[in-house]
Length: 137
Image (cartoon, rainbow, N blue to C red; front, side, top):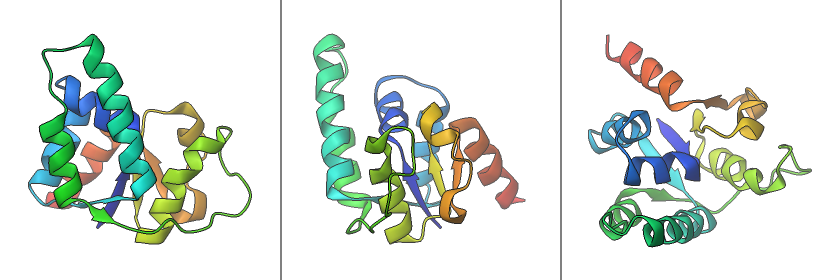
């Protein structure tokens, strides 16, 4: 199953323990495939490096290199008119459409408000972990 992770989830996973990191741990255990596009990876990198300036004890580079090596890269699909209240969020929808993703993991209220655009669930990390756990049974 392909899944897209919003930048806020990836950044939280890199810098702090918690649900977002547990989501990426599930990816490491091959419970799902992480789908990205070049613009999404660029956003991950840019934000991670900005945060690292304020939290120098965390080096985001190993995480970013791992994502770059292991994530499946797709060309963004057209989404037509802007779907989210924040047009910058459409890049995650474009990736989800291109990859056939079943879910986008996010804490972004603008994305979460969409609920299920194009049949793609928008889930918080907690909701996603609950779904993944349920599929193990």
